[in-house]
Amino acid sequence: MIEIDGSQGEGGGQVLRTSLALSIITGQAVGISNIRARRKNPGLAPQHLAGVLAAAQICAAEVTGAKIRSTSLTFSPGGPAQSGAYTFDVSKLAGQGSAGAITLVLQAILLPLALANGPSHLLLRGGTNVSWSPPAQYVEWVLLPTLARMGLTASFTLDEYGWYPVGGGQAEVAIQGNTNLQGIDLIERGEFEKLQGIAIASNLPSDIPQRISARANNVLRAAGFPAAVQPLRRGGPSTGTGLFLASLYENVPAGFSALGEKSKPSDQVADEAVDELIRYDRNEWALDPHLPDQIVPAMALAQGPSAMSTIEITLHTLTNIDIIRHFIRREIKVEGKEGQPGIIRVEGDGYSAIDK
Image (tube, rainbow, N blue to C red; front, side, top):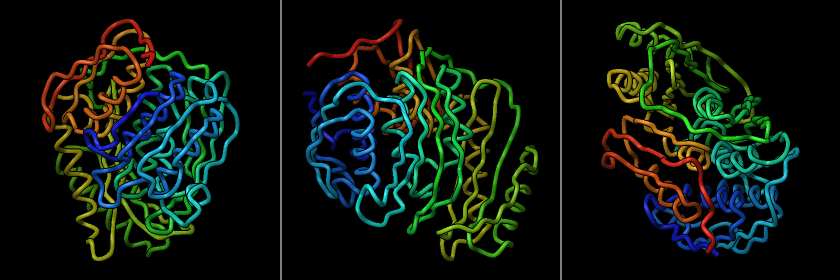
């Protein structure tokens, strides 16, 4: 059994999700201690427990310690991931109401199902646009298009928005399966091609998304970008607002977002996301700071070498690289320091599982 200290690196839920995914793919049992030890409320929160149970279901795993606030667990895959139709509801899996992020649950099962022998369809219920997680638009506009260039074919359809604290959102993910991951060169972003954006509000007055989009478009125009942000008002089971932007370049997309909250001015929501986009565009590095940690596991599993440059080497990325090294043999080199721009290279023609 591979032993993982959940307090290493960034010490959060990503240690758990990457360990689960690679455990399934390599067929290695894993024991994880000190789960989320660096968080204010350590142990498994609802979205983390949902990820464990979802991962267990797709591979018939034997699991111990799968309960709320548990700080340790063991996970023994019963075999490779099995393709099929699955429904994963964070609240139902956790046994309590939750706006736990479905995009984080997806991180634990996307790669195993992409490598499974056949297509899969996921119905995911929970939080779709919540703090400390990739918003639904990031998965649809940035993550999946980048993975598609590596050979992973999947689509993401947002049916219902789910905001903190109620959740209740829903998305569908169709995964083709039988994926043959190929290495990718993301050192250069290429020429700017397109900007897309949405200012969304659920169960709030229509002037809120209009104000956010107007402010965002004004700042974008002043910086030389097209005014591409569209306002949208929706209903649904929960209330919330936010701005989501994707800047598309020849070789890679980049994503930026900001969430609204009570007493937070619309202009501030707009400025947070737009300012981050402008800072990114003014530098030469290819990837936004949020993408490297999400795609480095795929790079490590791909045939052939990969490389990416990023505006920031985050602790999340460095932690994910460390977790990968527990499961597979592959040379991964980091050129740069945490918190600074840099390059990450995955070398060699392929990987092999580490037999513990």
